[in-house]
Image (cartoon, rainbow, N blue to C red; front, side):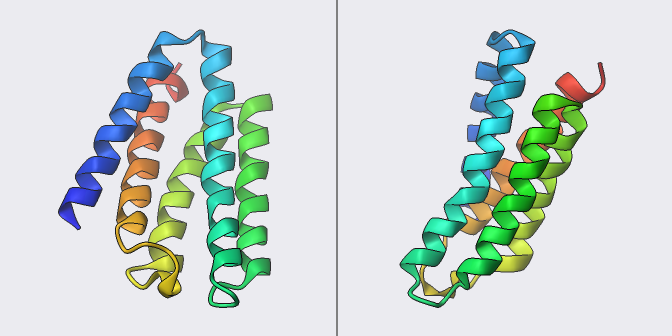
Amino acid sequence: MKREILTGIALSGATGVVLSALPEPLAKGTVSILLSVIAAIYIGFSLASKGGLPVLKQVAGAVFFILLAFLGLWSSWWFLVVGLALHGVWDYLHHGRRGKGVVPRWYVPFCAAYDVALALFVAVVYGMR
């Protein structure tokens, strides 16, 4: 599990490098899209689980995070920070180590680490402006 966490943190660092090279409005749009895609991935896991992960619960979660993504895009970076951080918590608390047999074991710690590390990056680089 340590490798998955370190990989998530490293990938969020690479994401941060790319974001830093973009004009701020484009970086904001990119983070908004990332949050939306990250949230929607669990809908795919749910459909693949054949009932192991309730679809309605995954859709409700995705809608919540996509709403935060739009609010972040249209308003403050802090909505994106909160969305990413909460998605990291959602990953861990909602899917934990089990993954209901369809979410790969490595994915939850990887995604949680990526989400939280990227939230910290966005907070420090963009939220503090």
